[in-house]
Image 1 (cartoon, rainbow, N blue to C red):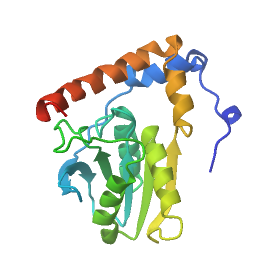
Image 2 (spheres, one colour):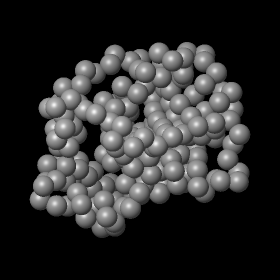
Image 3 (tube, rainbow, N blue to C red):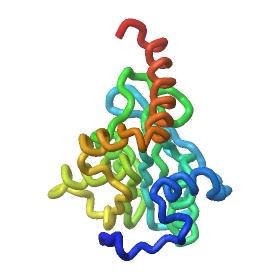
Image 4 (tube, one colour):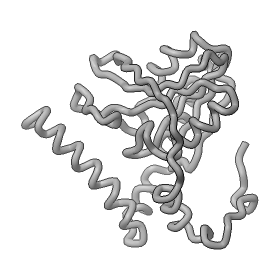
Length: 207
């Protein structure tokens, strides 16, 4: 279900888009959740770290974070807390290189890496009656692409999906975030990405 922008009425102080974006990052309370980490092997001899909350429920939500996020992102933690309260188990994916441990291969992650989402789905779907996919930003793009690719072969246990703040037009989104008015976001992403590229340069010198 899509929600029209005119249905959202923020408080006065949050009507500015930048404040609305930055405020929860700085001031949103961090839920105290007991994640249990599981490492999954991938088809190409790499790994994915998935943080789990399993309370023997019959429903599972698989959460996909945004660019340079992780299971520790506040929006993932907040969503996880809400889902647990509604009797869902949670599997919060950390993309390659996003779990605090650098992945094995030169390749890390990108918005089209649905093979990694598929790895997570196939690993856990058999343990539940129904599964929901939830993606934020880049993760939302990943979820929607996965659904489109599996339109006629989607596992019947996947009963719903949610995509939040999705950059459907990646070129337009990259050009927009490169504007001077968005410098704070660009700086934040590039700082994190450059640190990872430096680690990759040490891991794979000359490549």
